[in-house]
Length: 94
Image (cartoon, rainbow, N blue to C red; front, side, top):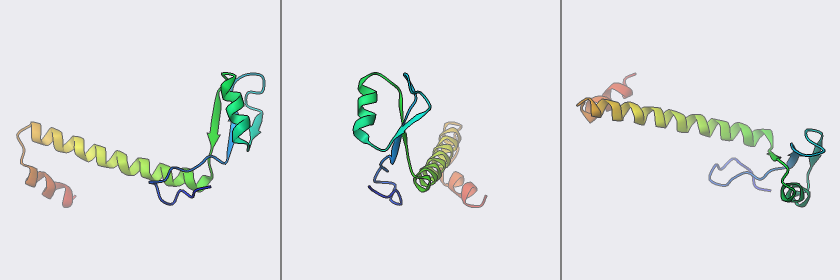
């Protein structure tokens, strides 16, 4: 099982929850083969991860959202005829 401290390597599920079919919401398995069997029957299956992996991935998502927001601000600034260097100065000084 890989650890998710390195975001480049996707974390592996530690279990799977059965969310469709006759056992929806009450069945959990640690067997990937069982989960694949549920999926092959067309049932919805949710992979479950260790909490530290979820926390690390949420932090990475928030970091990426901040980068995307700054990029959008830059594009808006440039589309309005703004100067790139002035934009850089404005974000580096708050």
